[in-house]
Length: 366
Image (cartoon, rainbow, N blue to C red; front, side):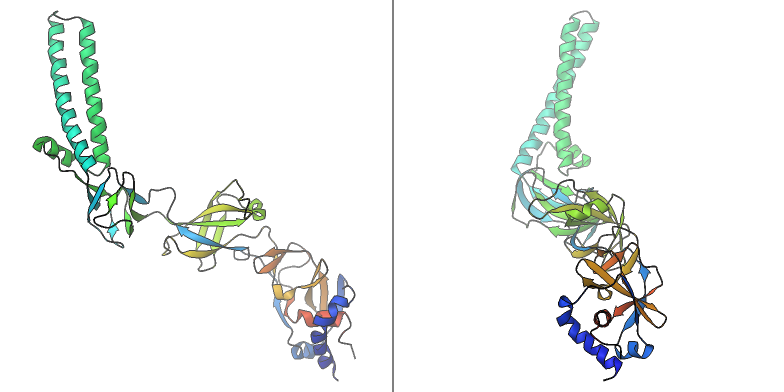
């Protein structure tokens, strides 16, 4: 039996006998010829430093920017009367989104008209009392009281006016209401930002409660990713840190790290923001790659053999390979070596189990 065949047998025996074998030396040279390396299908690759794609991977969900309002809410209860845009439509700030018919709004419009009348009467009373005070007919205390009443009337009118404006009525709508003195009970909700309508949350004819969300908008802000990561990894993260996703070469910046651990899952929440425009939509599931905890050398999982708590890799040398025990840290699907190996050294990427069997004497040397 030639040496290569005997050493190939070592590969088969190692999976059975290694648990019963002795320990590996921390540094040991194993003579292996180039022909044997070829016959045993042992492959090498240069060791390279870890990068941003070498960290732990966790599922993450694309969300709209939490720094901007992404839903349109009703201001008065009522019935949805008409949609003005469809999902996928581009919108600008002020674009009409949906119209509702509301008895509550009708009452508010009527209250606004009544407040205008009360304010006009209060202003007339103030003008009258100012004239009477100038003529010495009334005391200053009476003028002060009339002035307070006028101010209160103006504040009441302003509060109702602001609520109507917030509900989607324009200043022109309120001017028309003031001139016509006819309350319609309908109002239109408008976009507060530019973007795209992504979802209708109600249909025509639906009853809409006060404050209910009726539409979702994807603004022009860059989207974010929301994820939960193992709590033990939290110490290696910091706000502003660069992160990546597995699906494409897209960069993100870490923006938020929760300060409370979920007792059930032992995870913490993180938020990261894309730094460039992207086509990912809210709700999509991606894979967030956490940055490695340290700098060092990437060690492929297939390059590592275990002997108890020790981890060994095989480095090419003139006339064979060197078995080298190094301390490794998990780094996603690979490992990270902080010391014990330098970039550019050729390490075994296939055939490590064969070499382990040879090292333990299972393959012979004759």
